[in-house]
Amino acid sequence: MTSGCVQHEHDAFLCIIYGRCTKFLPHSAMTMPSPNLEVPEKRASSGFIFVFITITLDMLALGLIVPVLPNFLKEMTGGDVGEAAHMIGVFGFFWALMQFISMPIMGALSDQIGRKPILLISNFGQALSNLLTAFAPGFWLLLLSRILSGAVSAVGSTANAYVADTEPKEKRAQKFGMLGAAFGLGFILGPAIGGYLGGINLRLPFFVAAGLCTLNGLFGLIMLQESLKPENRRPFRWNSANPIGSIQFLGSNPKILKLTLIRALCDFAQVVYPSTFVLYGFYRYGWESDVAGLTLGLVGLSSMIVQAGLVGPIIRRIGEVSTLILGLFLGALGYGLYAWAPNQYILWASVPIASLAGIYGAAVQSLLTRQIGPEEQGRLQGAVGAVQAATNMVGPLVFTAIFAWSIAPVRDPSLPGLALSLAAFCLLIATGIAATGARQFRADQASAKN
Image (cartoon, rainbow, N blue to C red):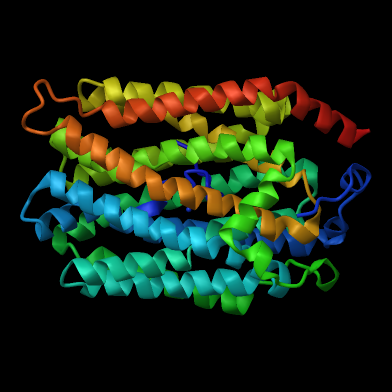
């Protein structure tokens, strides 16, 4: 599993449901050192530490609620797993719709007013969303909480822009990998704690998540330094802050378009996790919330090890492009093993393979940020986030519908792994696209070094 996103990665990782996830410079200008490389190393380091902590706490808050939400929805639907899956699909659609609308706005705003205000808005907004969920008596307030969560979900993309502001190009892939490790660290602790708290009361994890988001926002308000220099800021323009304008921005550069298509296929595939993974375990292996939490904790631990310990060495050894291709292929293999696993022990044994897919996220993110200058990094991240949101609108509806169809009582035998198989196929397509563009991407990297 990857940690994308950053939104993307992992991006996404279980973020859809739960609320977490132009004109280009001429080539000669793109190969010049970025003005942001003048950021003092101490300032860049301290800022990155805060962003790392922010991502960790953000994912910890998310991880608290992941293992209990399916049972929370089952309780509301009278124990109907299929109906709970459909509700998750509806929530995911509206969450992603709001993200699709708001991400380009957040990205363009961060290019004008800086990264810090956007990070604070996202943290405090997520706190309010979790409180609404905790108090929700039924469907409509839950839906409102997901809409709010989608509207303010900008932590991952803004963290990516922060890294692009403060780190030299040759170090970005390693830093993006460390942000992926922050996702994994939060997800080691979050699901295990959430499963335990959910055993006490299904609403308790939402209160705790709201508290963590609030503390994180207060921490940022006091400690975080702004990364975007005044000379690198650009005016806010509505034509670049709407989803259609953002997609046109991506399409104006063929290399960015190809990388974004790879990201879109991966983001779509990753939707299978928040949409059906826990429900899949409930149905096929008879999991309870505690087992689901421990399983997700194992996934988080494996992901953290990959992101913190393997991304940098692998990229240094084989390069960003080969790392991208290898990660996509391993992701397809891991999803396929999940779909086939006849028992939970084989599924658990497959987790390290699936987690190795995490090496692709840092590579594709670094390749994307190389394509433009510092004054448009926020716009780029917002545009990529809008595409991710578009896939996230479609993904939950597709995967939950496939899962519900595959386990319907009339289906004999049932096919619970069908949704995971579709995700594996999407990653195989992405692998092929990356392989066909490998020579061009390597040539660009070589020219940038010369």
